[in-house]
Length: 369
Image (cartoon, rainbow, N blue to C red; front, side, top):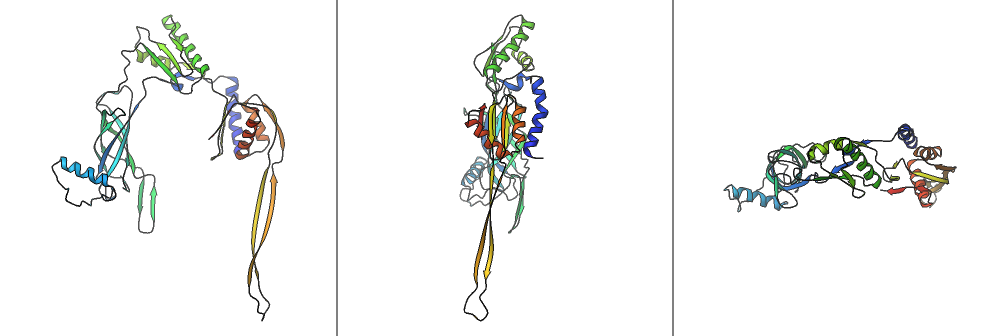
């Protein structure tokens, strides 16, 4: 089946649902609570216990400096000794501090090599402090690294799978400092839409007020702009419980009419509200085939001539898809059906949609990635 036909089949399956009933989703799926985002942490550390796959100390001077500083802290002086171990590697350690986290809880960390190490398999991360953008230390990471990739080979051939120079430590970091997010002293919460839209913000505020009227005999929500919805907290309900109740309320989000095109992969995504005003479309493709046939010219026997190599060139031109069709419709179904009747491939659909947008017949935003 052609890609266009498959696209049309998928749309025809989904479109009746969109046409006969509005799509509803939970507020927690389209909005986040302001102040509950995570915070990125990072740190510099050393991985030990590698089986000869670590950094070359001469090629990675920062690894050598860190190695010497580590041993100095332990009372071992190797400053005048040329260390040549390859069982150690310098790494960057990354993690995300969840909102409302407390000291003593654990989070996962990711580890990535900084030097010329070939693999981190079998290594263990030494105690590494993880700090945030404000320079404060929020967690400490340590433990054995799990690496999914591998690399093996000899002098003439190497086989590798995945990325052996990065790994992960499950529950590898202990939180030392609490997250700054606090809900026990707030008087209101703000819901932020993931996809900003004025209609969606108004709809979210309305459905929250419907719930509030039934429970508290009062309205609590109002839209601030196309992204934020402010909700006042009633005195008798804590913020966490109110956020959980609001998150489960179902709402019908409004989306902009948009067509997204990825020319590299031939992917085309058409929004349900995209409309096409009547327009005539003709799309044809020209294929040129050039064939070189080698020829050899032999001289006559006992002549003073010589063999000459030559070639014969043939050029063939093919033109396909010279159909003209009229595309018009107020729905996604009619748009895809019209393009599918013309027998266009994804590359042809991309060219047609761009030309329709230039002609002003595409009523929606065209995004080309």
